[in-house]
Length: 231
Image (cartoon, rainbow, N blue to C red):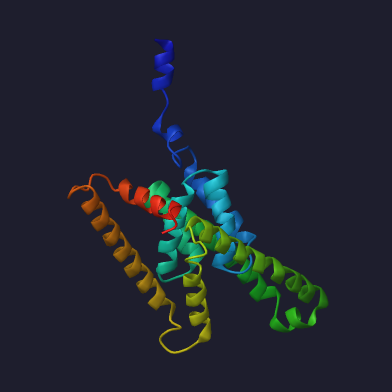
């Protein structure tokens, strides 16, 4: 009886990810630490956010994090702020979004304010020590940007047969040609392609089951079977 009571004493706050006590302060401190020590913009933050939110804190699974990342990329605004708002909303709604967004914005704002007050452009360019520090930071920034790209590619199951899609899209965006260099075009085309793929899989399952579509997970099983068969 006592064992059953102890089992039932587990509260939702301790059982569900992101429901522990002090979650708002943890959200703020986590994103504040990331915002204060990350150089290179939103993409450079992604690998650190993923490590904290997915691996260390285990607030959300990796697949869901990548879905939130895709949504954050598709929305206007700063990527780092968008993903922090998405994670905060996923955990604790509006208050979680505010806590995570403040944690991301506040350190960056204070650092930029301090640089604007104490470091002039002439001082940054002419001071050998400051110039050397920023020159050393640049290669690390490149690594921070490349790492989440590789992780996202693996999670998206990009293989040798599909790797040409992001490569071609990246080259066309980089080309600066009219129309085809607009990233919004590829967001729309990607969404349309995903929708058409889903409809195709649903029709195949519909035929395979004799007109009955029992479960959405059957689409994932069919996709896995196609990959195993090399289709």
